[in-house]
Image: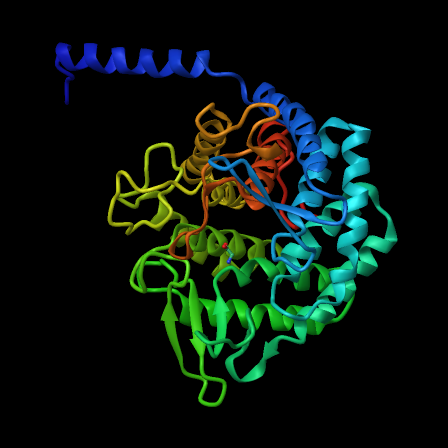
Length: 408
Ligand code: GLY
């Protein structure tokens, strides 16, 4: 029988003691979540005051102090109202709700937008939350109309939804982020509307599995299709180079496949998501706090910038994955999400009241090769951080995990 040598036993006991005492001194998650939502209620009001009512926040440059806004057609325009609604749900702060309603009112017209694939982010995130929390049937109508707009971009030859219009660089680009927008179609179908929306979403997801991923479960950012021949080339427009692993793209893909499993209960999508999760969590260049470098192949790792937005998306996805898995694997996803949430809530990443233009989370990387939104806050970083808090509270603290979930 194996006997632990007494010196090893002492070291092991010491490590266990250190780990337990570190855990017991950390703020309990339910308190951390409550504090983060109370902070967000104050801070997002600052953001609301800093941005005219007719516009949406986009980012803030901490070096120059410049606030950057967008119109309602920008792909991220829905995240501010969607974030406010999570915060309202957890704080019942009526001032927060009032800002959310004003921003929903200016966003609503984009349900007719057909200029790109981002209707999920632009309409489903804010109006999905609004309908779930406030129950106004008008919000449902807005979501249904947006689904009709999104399917205009479906291209049967390539069994995919075209992400961006053709331009100087791309012919028919389909990006991994598009997995996120499928939820709009799956949700509307599930609610009893057009079953074709679901078919289109699943064709897109299946094409993504077939074409977008490398053998190691890393994804390209963009596949550029030839709409006459159906052929494609893989590119990494926002990543380091075409062979690299752009962090946020991996996060979109993981989140997307877990979400598709929620709507289908088809194990194929769950297993695919689990493989992506293993690739990421076991990656030799994944940092210990699980806040990834902006690209896993950035040449200056370990000095490369981290992308807090990718981490926030990952933690939300890990939490959902924990609902559909057991024992050690489930535990791993919950612990990973907790690690990320604690990291993002720490002083290194979470801003102070009144700072950072009113955004919550620092150190996002939008589009580094274009030198755009680099090491700055991003509306989607804030949104998926809040969603992670929400999910952790509902599923881990309150233990209301579920299959066949209504949208969380
Ligand atoms: N293209 C969306 C993103 O930057 O993640």
